[in-house]
Amino acid sequence: MHHPIRPAVKADQPALVDLWYQGWTEAHAAYVSAELTAMRTRDSFLIRLQDMLATTSTLGDKGEPLGLCAVKGDEIYQMYVGPQARGTGAASRLMADGLARIAAAGHNEARLDVIPQNARAIAFYEKAGWKQSGIETVMVDTLGAPFPLECLVMFKPL
Figure 1 (cartoon, rainbow, N blue to C red):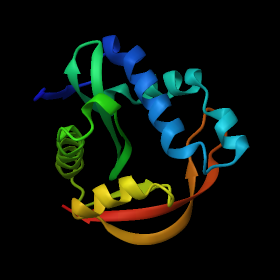
Figure 2: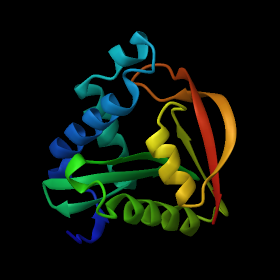
Figure 3: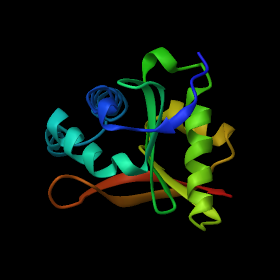
Figure 4: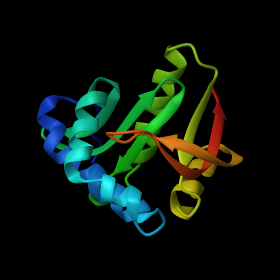
């Protein structure tokens, strides 16, 4: 399963929304407030994905993406890999693509925020050379006002 990394396209949207919604729910729903979980509807992911499609890379056949990596400035903004692609190197390849795009935009350091309870993701990032900066209250995007969420902030020099 060695699919090339490619820009996400409109045909990928339905599957990417499902993948992102399911991945977010799996990684976050048990640890965040009911208020934030209530904001994270499938429709909210669709609207947000439409807004970030131009900064999102994926892999897999068109219409059948296996993961996503969206960047925003110097940040790995969203990073999810579907269950069928876990353990295949897809996450590492998506991350490398996101870091290359951040570096190409002129940044010498990348940042990401991860929920502190997501030990699996934190271990993945640390193995890839990311360093923990500490817990901060991050204003995460919603369809309305940004929502305060305690996150572990991580950095990686480029």
